[in-house]
Length: 440
Image (cartoon, rainbow, N blue to C red; front, side, top):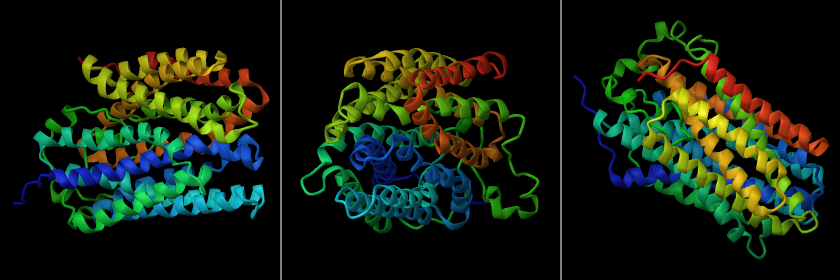
């Protein structure tokens, strides 16, 4: 007989919360300043967006690998690896951009080296989120697991609010626009030291499970996924049954997952295109191309409004209204189509911010909807594999969609908005005709 899961103390929970919070805040802070940095360097907008693509591709490839490895090698080790990848990526990105802005490197070389440094986050930073959630899932009982997983997942959402809010404040004398990179790398070092010294080593006995495990970047949860199933056993770990590893491997083409993954990929591309365009749109609409350093504030404000709206949807609307996966996905993408309109037509900061917030509420409903739908579609023993696939699907949208959106925007703004609207409406059609109806 095995011992029951160990309850995660408040101190350890705060540390796990900090791991997710710092990485999320750092990435959204970066998004606030990169349009201005690209303009200062004289780089075409599309090349700034493409600099993220290699990192996103690595995230898609590596997230499932790290999710499985955390079950074998221990969650603390994978968390430390992920935070170290974040630190190195941000420190090197900041260094490269600093030399580029000071004229020591050509603009092209600066963005090339930035893309390489950024790839460290996609390759190694993707180890942290699955490990954090698996650590919590495997060390809490059924009664506490949903609450604990929801708290950890919500830290990522809170980070998306803090990042844009802090970014303008971190543009310091001597550092300028690379200030957020340097300071968030420092924050990462603090988290890594605390992680290594304050979190005990773990001997993984349970595979992580639960709906939040399958949606690492949302605050959505579904208590049924935890309460209807018994706690894990050592036999659930991948190495315990190697003879079945190939036969039991969950695939992207699994008919249970196909419609949900299709909705997630299509809707994710619409969201990624909007996020890719919004910073450059604000520089143009507010007339800040000639003074890009002033763009970080408005861009951060709009990104923050979107993050708050997303949290409103995930922390408020979904629990309050009791929305199921299909309903959440359907209404979310419907709202997204509405919100894109004022973003496309607005000429002032207020109109664009309101439109972006409406669209973000929609995407905030959509993403937990499709992730929980994918989780509910498979068996309890397949939750870990489902988590890796959904994490990869979330990252897949950011490989090319932001750059495609910016390229379309630079050639024809209305074509860019039309493609975003078409993708959003396509998900609505999928919801109506292809997704399984919510169980009452």
